[in-house]
Length: 301
Length: 254
Image 1: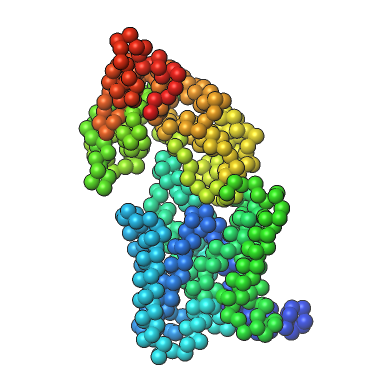
Image 2: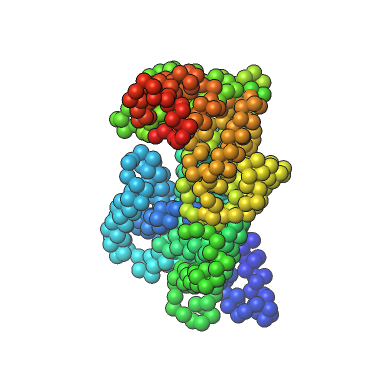
């Protein structure tokens, strides 16, 4: 894949040097970041609709915070400071599986349980980060936590590409089953859908996505990109198709704009922060549209 | 087509240390309407969920499908649909979610499924509501949509969990005529019902469940008994008081 990335970078850089594309495209890190943005934009936008429909916003946030702990563990165990993927994937998957397993075997409400897991994960992460902060440059940790287009490498793009393929391979054919399982588990079971398995598949999808996207959006802001585009789309859309498509568009535009705007205007912003702010502006616009135009208020809230 | 019969042997269910059901021995005949009645909290929904294999019950539940039944299709109409009412999911989206095999609902219907859906919606009187959001449907319309999904594919066993809740008169008429039509086609129908007059009119057999099996058999003898009057809090102070079945015609039992 490295040769392919190199070919894409060279081609785009050539176009930028000819003046066909903006000057920013002469830098390979910009091209890396935009390629990642083009992958994660539609993906997070699409999966985000399910996060909103399944009311799992708090869960995705807890996975984002678990990724922070995964970073700390990775650095402690001697993994690469910039790509501690093994620790992050292992810790986050373990966290997600344990959380989902416990959810099915306790009388506690889902948000209470997630709150407990999230707090414990944060406490462990904060404690470990104190130890590792002496070992690494704080800016590297900031990049992992809040995103940085400067640090996107071929490895990051490979990880993202593999995760994208896995999420598409499971997410598209199981979309209906996962959604029905959350709308009415009893009805889903009567239709021979394995509700518990669907829950596990979904939480694993969220976990993989969160870890894979952290270089662009940042570990603690991925959940915002899962939620905000879907929430913005929900304000003005009345069909599932429109909901998914608009959420994907908002998410993709936010990712691209969030990468390009800080560079274009020399703003000292982490890419994650910029992406979320662009997405949030879409949410504000659609909220105002819903409030002003009665046509968008078809559903009873 | 003929639906299956169902045999329960010593069916019991305990959840969190609380005994919900115990010692239920029951045979539900094939291709008939069987109503499950009983007081609130008596375990009716837990009973039908045990039949569906959705509860960690003890004892045996055997669904005896007729020879030649390769699909073994169970239609299920739940009591309600718990969801975020502001979600942009239309009736078509919901039906596509139910009907499509692998094609995601946001990509539209799989081949031939749209026609099946339109037919099912027409049968429940919702043909004009296909593009309406679920959150904008009335409770009765949502219940009819849930009935429509149970018709795809044509069920051999239909389980109805208090389907009449929140239905208006027209909705009730549609439901009752559909239930009768399905029975005439040989579908086995297990129906949790509250309206004892409907039970009396339509059921071939009933079972009354209040943690245990209180009664199983034809509806008439039980509905006219003092035991039923006591269980459903109708009183018959004098011997000449009309039987429960007549009282029931003026309203629903608890």
